[in-house]
Length: 219
Ligand code: A2P
Image (spheres, rainbow, N blue to C red):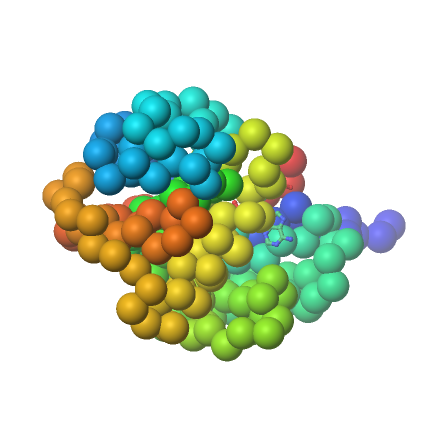
């Protein structure tokens, strides 16, 4: 009889373990609450479709939150996406599968579309990162490998999760251009910067460490 065929998942990624996931959801809520009450934020609500000085409940605005907090490495759609079979067959992927990794978060951000956390990958973690991950969504720009690594914390109505990584690359593009951000002061113990078009990024005072498992999500 034929042996069972390997199944390619919906996506591969690092899945945050339960305890750290609870803590990260709290951190995210705290950030969204503080930002929503932050005067400079309230004065710049037009990109969110609200009048300035209005109070915007960001927890409600980003009401769609992922079931399991994770950092996607490769979206495969069960093998339908080009390159997913090759990715699944890579030595590093096979070796890393079901292993524990510590991820590091360096920043939290919101845009009118998404709320997310920036993930800083180690050299070892980059071995699981697809070569074309950044090019796939922003073919015209050059980014350091791993720039797109993130955890989606929430999305606005009608916005797909995949948008979070695109928004993060947009921030990095503005950072690379230089001088396109304004220091707006301090919230949650860290510096908060305003970019443009409703884009805000909090640099974490200390990197947040997350225990994760590299695995596949099969839906
Ligand atoms: P993200 O990694 O930004 O959170 P969905 O539920 O839409 O099928 O997506 C499942 C996961 O795969 C989500 O985490 C989502 O975004 C990610 N994802 C969806 N589509 C893509 C894509 N085209 N490229 C990369 N990641 C994707």
